[in-house]
Each structure stands twice: as C-alpha cells, then as structure tokens.
Image (cartoon, rainbow, N blue to C red; front, side, top):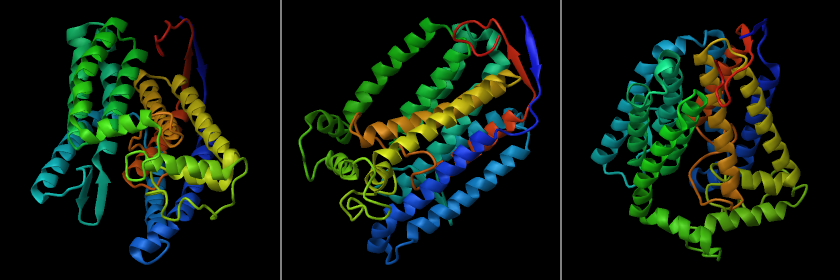
Length: 381
C-alpha cells in the first residue's frame, strides 16, 4: 500500500469562514425572528437575541480552545465523557420527575447554567465510537467481541433520550453512530440485523405516544388544522411562499408576528425564506454543503483512524441536522424538534457545533497521510 506524506501547517480557512458566516447569519436572523415574541413574553425585543449572542461567544471560546488543544486528547476522555453524559441524562429525568414539570425532560438547569443533555450525549457518542474503533477495529467484523459492545452503548444512550422524550434526537444519534460503524468496516449483515431489531423496537415506541401519531397523521392529511399538529408547518409554508425569489426584506416578515410559533428556533429557516427568499435559502444550503465538503476532506486527510471517524461523525451531525430541519420546514417530512445548526436560537447545540468546528480545524492542522487502494466503503486501511 502506497502512502503519500502531505504537510498541513495551517488550519482550514474555508471551513472557518463558512462556519463563522453561518453563525453571523444565525445571529442576525435570531434578532429579526425573535423581536416580536421577545416583546410579547418579556417586554423587550432583544431578550432572545442577547441570550443567543452570549452563547455564540461561549461557543467561539470553545472553538478556539479546541483549535489549540491536540484533538487526540479527546480519545483519552471519550469514555469518561460518555459516562458523564449518561449520568446527566439520568439526572435530567430524575429532576423532571421530582419537580413534576409538565414539559419534556430535555433541559438540565444548574443555577444560571442550562443545557440540553442530549446534545452532550450526541457529541460524546461520536467521540466514543471513534475511540472504540481506533482501539478495536481489528475485531469490529466479529459480532460478539467487536460489533455488539458499541451497539449496546448506542442503544442505552438512545433509550435514555427517548424517555425524555426526544425521539428525533435519539434516532439521529443512532443513525450517525451506525453510519460511523459502517464506514469503519463493520459487516453489512450485522448492520442490517441491528437495524431490523431497532425498527421492531422503535415502531411500538412511536405508536405509544399519541402526539407522535398525530404528527404523522397530520403530515399525510395535508389539510389546514388551525388547532392541530400541522398548524406550524402550514404557517411555515405560508412564510416561505410570501418570500418568493428575493424575499420581503430583512425584518419585514409577517410570519414572525406571532403567526408562526417559536420562529427563532426550529422554524427559523421559514423566516429566512420569507425575508431573504429563495436566494437566501439557496445560500444557506450551499454554505452547509460547503461546510460538509471541507469537513469530509479534512477527515479523509487525517493520519489516524480516530481523527478520520471523529471528523466524519462531527460532519455528519451538522449536515444531517441541517437537511432534516430543511425538510421539516418545507413539509417534506413530519415535524421534528431538530434545530438548524449555527442558525437556530440555542445554547448547548450552538456551543457543541462550534466546538465540533474547532476540532475539525485542529485535525486540519495535523500532518496528513493519503492512502491508496482502500477497500470500498472503508475510510482507512
């Protein structure tokens, strides 16, 4: 096998510029989309904007720190971080039961600090899979000693997130993890068997919750139900339709005037479409594709298995969330609670995504090895 050594002394400027541009667009659009709802709920128009800006600054600090610290250090803390994320998921549910809160147990508040524990679990799962495969890749094709252990871990994480309940995030974590195992060379029959068992478990879970069934029914119904589950999607389509090709102008959205519920979070793309039109949506999607392309290129050029899989996992989480969110606001898939990376109002999600960018930038500064004659479907030999 032939190896070509390539020196990479500088971070990937294209990746950094793309990520920062998405954050900048997100900050502007959170301000535009949340002004009315901030005024309605808090008496001032900048409540959500100030919180988002503060979290963006924290995320940028994490990104810079990740650029400075060698990414291989994450291999050493992968297992402790995974255990910590499991404990946080359990703590979130326990506090929810103790306090008797009616809202889903997705957020953990510790004094002034608030975090969505599933975001931390998603990040730690990617780290764990990358570290596990780096250590056990020679055994991965054996079901009992290689493939089964990470599947048990993934299933446990998914179960803890489902009971929050946060079904969509759980499924996304499973999809990302299994994709990484496939790229690592896991046997397809093992993956197919695991997917079949997962579907057999997840379908009854979906059917057990009335609101999930209602979302699916409303998706296939297509009629306008002002009080039903498809109200938000119909308002999203109205906003997108109002935008046309070039949009109605920044700050001029009608949908954000308390017609579209929570326009600064999961449906912020609808407001972008209304104010910036098809041109604005096209720019956003292009930026995500550029971000993914740079992340994949960085990952494939890494020197070790851990870096390759870590980079691919971080890239997958960003692009999958972006495209699922886009599909939701355009009524191509049933409504989920997945935010638009870098753009939606958020806390732990925004910080985690910027941390991911910092790790990718750190990987891009490492010395690279380009290998030839790799097996199909495997990123490394």
